[in-house]
Length: 322
Image 1: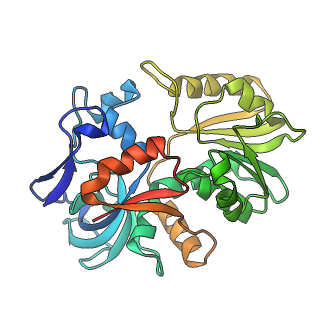
Image 2: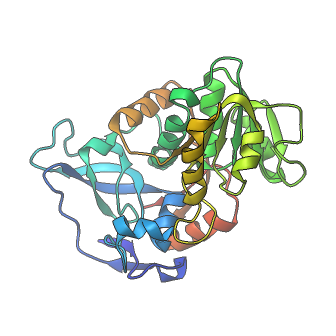
């Protein structure tokens, strides 16, 4: 089968399209004939092995799994001996490690049946970014009707879903993005837009009940100033920063500080769960959320997709078609 493979951590220049053996599913896995795969920050982290602390899990010197990709959509080709609920021919979406390939294995607990009415490309744009937004806006982070929510990085994959979900919950949503993304963010449900090139999130009179930060570039102090005294900050992922922990150092400070102040400071690393995929499936089938795709790339151009992810400021998700 054809797959996008890397032998060492580094830039997208190290990715190669190769013929490799088709994977064999374990007892709790299914083999998926991939039709499309999502391109998000998680793919960049897998490719670069950064922050470096992540290599304890990903592989110290080189990636344990050399095939890139983390989520996607396709058809079940075969099921493991202990798998129930799926059979060959089922159309599925979810966490499929090594999804930049013609076939990938996925744990049955981390996939669900594809939402009816969505294309494979739309379904591939949903799992990681959709689950991250859903989990960010849960618990104390779930806004109540009429509350004010600020989504930083609102034009990206996670941000676009966070805007849609917060608006669905009845919140008054303000999205932060560059000038080219303003109309897109409004189309996702934002009542207000802040152009980060012209104003700071703390310049205006508003303070927010919930702040979801997807960009990773603002200081913890600045994000706290945007919050109400009892507000909730959700830091998504470990973007930004340098050194061994990268952007996770800010996350660690937030968690350590939170018990001693009135504000609830949380960091979120999304976990793939079938129940969340099922929730996203239901919301998509009801038309309450809609995947937004900036552009698609064929499998052979997956490196270009990752470069565009980091430098092109995509509106919504990028998708690799297979």
